[in-house]
Image (cartoon, rainbow, N blue to C red; front, top):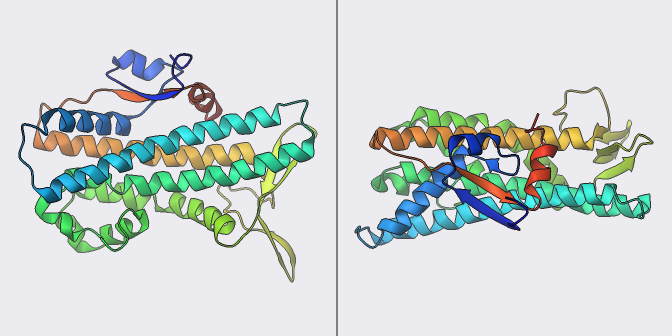
Length: 284
């Protein structure tokens, strides 16, 4: 499939295809959101809705498109990283310069994925309660998590949805720390290639006790420098665990409103997606 599609969304797969196709990044959240979008677009001419809800739905659709585009970007960046590292005609110095920029872009996109998902719970909140959500920093998942920690949030959304957002906070904070080190504090990832071909990386600062790696120790290693591939895989898989948890609870919320609600299985495909799926270890 990916041979014919540069990048795109597939909706309406049978279950076996959805589970086993190595070229398809299958996702319950993408399935839920794509189903909702198709239903909305096909029914909006025949269904009256307020200006407010129409505006909110427009924001959600834009966020969903941005969400999918950022996941495609993650796949493209990984493909570019591996292409550069495997390019035998490229000297190591250039490889490291190119890969450093790509790693910076990767964490920026990863952070953006989270913010886009902050719009999705609006679909399972009654219109009269939408005004209670944070509005000053709309589109900020951190602000949404702060709100979901308040007791009043339980009056407008289920505990299961709240738990998914609260449970994602640790990984989100790790990504945010890395992104802020690069974007706001001007820190540059330090990369070097070992004789084995493995790439190690860190983001260092100098203290009175010497050089300290500022990267969160997500690999639980007693080390001042980390295997770049393992690090990216771990933090990315944690992100997709959150994405799929959100998809499952949203589907359950739709079922509460309509026990016959049907979701069309789907996911993302494209020229770089097969390699991305393999990189993350999902084919094993």
